[in-house]
Image (tube, rainbow over all chains, first blue to last red; front, side, top):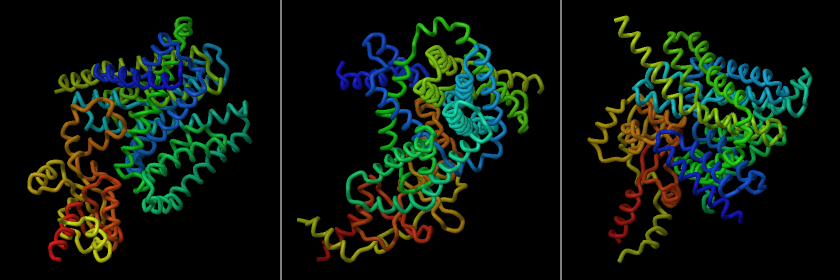
Length: 390
Length: 153
């Protein structure tokens, strides 16, 4: 099939299916993944196509770049860091251990176990926020901690991803190599911070005065590509560079003008990100899933349980009561974002096989479907206990 | 017939932002509640309100779009429920404002201000000197000024 027709079909179906899922009350990402599943089985598109692979790679880069640039507010993060740190740390560590142990249980290689661990760590807050708003529970203390900690969850997940990618490059974990890894990550962040504090603000002041069309927008995209490229040069992955680049850029007022944000959002969510999610659907191997029944079932259970248990412990430690801690944990169950980038990266590096990839995609779908139900039930439990107490 | 191009050329020479900006700006404090903002929208006809710190520094801008989103939070599509949703969940001006409004110096030329507004599809820009809000300039201010000058000729 002509590549233009392939891209056209990917975009058209991704948006059409996304709209359908949105109307059903689920995240549009599920629709975009379904579009990929349909395209591979009906239109015989293949994830081996080099152009589609490249566009999906750009999609992953711009997905994380936009998350850093548009959705991360460093001032807010700093203000809420103290109360969110413990819940986020436990909400990431416990699922990571669960994922790692699951891999070990099924005798996967060490690196694959690490990647499964990383896949378990992020949190997509969308479904939780929707449910908490519906139940008028978002403005509570637990609602606010949940919202803020989800940002830290994703940051910690990407940090773990950076470490695991480095380990995969060295194949072994030795003290000296760990130092080199840490040094590279630190050097990259220092360069980006210097750029963000001293060079980019002046550069964007100049760019704002340029006469050519869309100079600021292009400037933002150039920074995204530069940070992705630089991360690759430092042996980190482009997606991690893009995320850090996005956060750095989010502090520069000229680059954050609403009009520019809207254009970057259109560029990412209008073109590249749907292609990335549809490509995930294209890459799902349904036959691998049917043979990995028990593994897939355990992956789903442990991924969800890890978030609930880790979140429960962490939020208890910051003083939430048992019901609120459970609400916090259950609210962290949905995954529909960063973990898909993690499996795409692991797949492109040849570290995870089709059964892990497909099982994770299934876990994503299950997590967003069951979270509202569990969350409603947990909140009802709390309300019931309040009534009994009074 | 008004000759627009000659008006702008003339304006470029002798008008700067300080000459035509509105200096008496209606501002809000960071802790103004949504209800305070609604009262403000009812009382004045402005679309945006600069948020200032107690020291008079410009902290951000609250616009009608954001207030409307806050009011309709229960009915927005869940695609909106990313992290940026926090912007519409704030309970005061500080929580919902745009932290990065378009600004210009009072000494900038009229041409610079007009270009900036057109480039970013902005109807207003905040005029800032040493981080302090000193005025606000709208597209209408520029148009009215040019019209006034042409009529005086």
